[in-house]
Length: 366
Image (tube, rainbow, N blue to C red; front, side, top):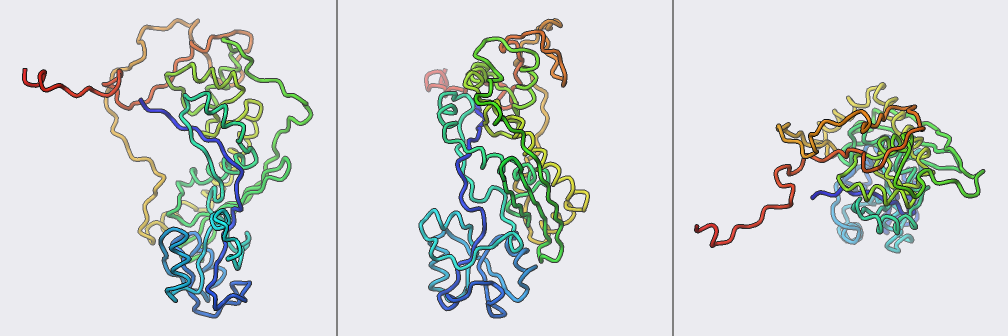
């Protein structure tokens, strides 16, 4: 049986990129001060495009390996004048003192979710998700949600030059997004600010889902609207709701009182992507993929549609069992959570009782 993973975000590190220079450039504090023809090691199309745009006097070479390997190549191979790294990674390993230059927004927009960490958990594991919610960092989660939605709408990923920059300042989320050509000569940019709804005027905001076996139509609409899908394990859904936790449609776990904030973050990412698409972002990224001989790693593989027998009870349901999930439905009626018909994935429909058992020798011989 397949379980869908849900995310809990941990406080993010520094999302910026940084440059570690060779010892011979120890006194350099600006990339513009590097000699013409200096070689920076990076395999990121995003980094190459932006650095080539701002510092055309520099050259770039691929570099592979973990952080230890890259630093060793910088120190020993005499091939690179510097390497470009994620600041969060080098700081978490305790090597912050090796950083020579931190790249700000005007130099380098960082990769989506760079510096952030998350814990993934099976969505039916109510106890673990409830425990993980104690370390969930909403500040990080809202920023990451906006950035990931932006990337998804553009079919982006690490194989295309796409950058972002987000700041959550009190109740305002500022998001910037950009796409680049491989050589950095083309750049499409947009930014947007969304004001977050606030519950601060309520000392203890009331739970939207009280501990109960019954839910109003309004609450059921919210479940359908926020969950990416309902699994056949309805009890896990009810368990999360009773702990005042809901899975937002973007896949992030959040408090039921904060759903509107994640809606705002999602809307912010969608609007930035839509603006860039109108400017021709898809064409720019398609040319970048072709030039870099890159594949869209985030594009889901096409599935063949096979006629299958529904595993849901095919007994006709009367009107009293149906739930209208359209916006603005009346909240006067009540419905049991068990009456919600879950969506079931189309994986392994012929083995509902689990994987097939291996036949014994005796049975096979007979």
